[in-house]
Amino acid sequence: MKLNHKGLAKSLQLAYSAEKAAAFAYIGHAKSVRNADQKKAIRQIELDEWDHRAEVFSIMQEYNIPISRWYEIKFAIIGRMISASCYVVGWFMPFFFAGKLESGNVCEYFVMIHKFHSLGITKHDKMLYEMGIKEKEHEVYFLSMIKNKKWLPFFEKLFNWGANKSYNDVDMVNPLPFEQGEDYCKKY
Image (cartoon, rainbow, N blue to C red; front, side, top):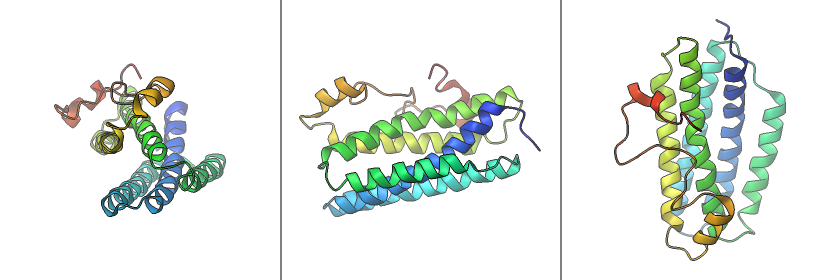
């Protein structure tokens, strides 16, 4: 079956390649931290990103959406650059920017639900919902690592993300069931 939604096809291609960039970045991030628990948590987040990439690819295959060579090259370079930078920018910045990145990634999957629904397709709702929630869990983890650091208020003001600002409206205290996942990220 071919998707008749150019924006959705592009969103899937972008997500597929961006997950690779995130995974590459987390390889360097995990290696750059000294704390064993942090290494383990970041390594698990990297594995989650590879899983998301595989899940997005399964959807792309179902609709004959090709992998974008441009996105693959672009995001591989970005991911490797971020990975390398984790060794030189200190401890705080990799956690901050990982949280900011994950915050934005949350809505990526909920917006895909909206786009699929515009075509009358609901069979991917649970998978997309779960990926969006997992991205939110990543955001919460990274924020928990820096929430009491002195640099956070400055970075939050400068980059518009932190303890009081998010790029999504997912509530992890009272999450909506996946059947209502379409209610998230309507204005993002």
